[in-house]
Length: 556
Image 1 (cartoon, rainbow, N blue to C red):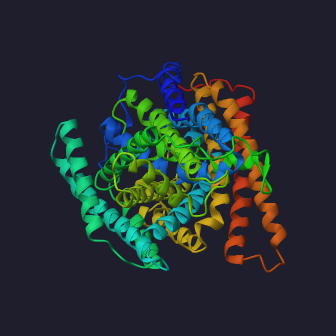
Image 2: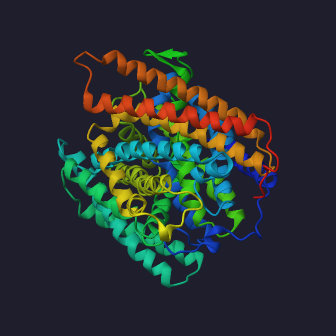
Image 3: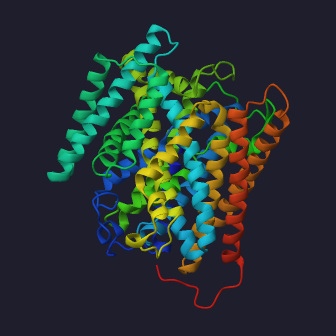
């Protein structure tokens, strides 16, 4: 399975990725928005490896680990097929298209792309959709991070592991800030940069394991929101870039160790190849395709690619490895997660425990074959998993803030002469606080209660992004037919899944099972997301399949 994944994903990058770059006209000589609009906050020319680190660490999240492990109830064959096919032809194409369209439009988000090529109403509705979705991501991932750091109700061994993970993560943040200021003012070679990053990484892990932090889960939830409040308004070079860069080494080293461990341990997969189209009352369509998101295709990726990464691209040729390449690496991580759950399963049954614990336990076992103590490797793997989620929070809080700000601005808005109410709503601090307040309220219900809605909304966002990109490619006279099948497939999957969620929650109304705080908020979000998505899709379809307007093509 691992050999097949490496060969397929490697060939996809060399063949399909390069073919897309050629068809879309990637131009290394063209000046990028990072130089044109450099402001030292969001727009800043950055080296390829640093932007790759930011993109990969931001998009990975907990999704490529949670998804395959949860979807393994259907068997390993459909999971593996969806990861590889979805990663190559759906997810990586969406990510590459998103960063390409953004770079060609002054580093603006997908929302701006929709405004320019579809219309202002479509843009505002899409940005509202993105803002609601960002709140869901913040709520789910903040709860995951708090529970991976907190010691409430845990036994001594688990509390120690969580305390070590928490301590190391805090050291990462402090070191990242210092590293960011260092790189800002001192120019060093790529090799020296890498060496320093690895030394800092090892030092943080060592100190974190020696001096664990034991705080309650509730307190950590408060601290996580304070952190993302700061991270979403801080210049990217001061925290976001260096933290993601350092984390990317941790994540890549973890993956390299896991792959090596798999080849050494050569575990037997104890999962069935296929368990049928209906398992435990869940239909493979659409459940498989919304459960496995980040490892195959994820709408969140389009927000990162067009919201933050595009503003740091210093050469258009960097877009292929940063976007298409990072997605394929994430697909490889999803395959590792599938092998992990298959290795620890018993008689085709997935063991109890959270996906993070299952993954960490299995990979620690693989690393044991390399002579690494399982107790230490379990802590390091747990750290890597929490780093995925915390890094995603960095980016999604900033994306949510930018979406809220853009919601009240047009491309021609005079920022110096706005009325008072507009200045308040577009203020980055106000936009951040209101986004995080709603995220906190939803996070108190626990990520398990909102994961299905998060997954469905995430995949629906991918359908909207693919449609917007198809319109962009058509309007700029570039080939976009490769987006049509992914777009229609994801639209069918996600609208079906959201309809099922709405029907299931409605059936609970009037019973003791209905919880207003969690179910009520979820059904409001679900109905709003479906309504907004349908209106945006109709607007996009009119531009994509309607009669061509005179002089409607735009150079890009």
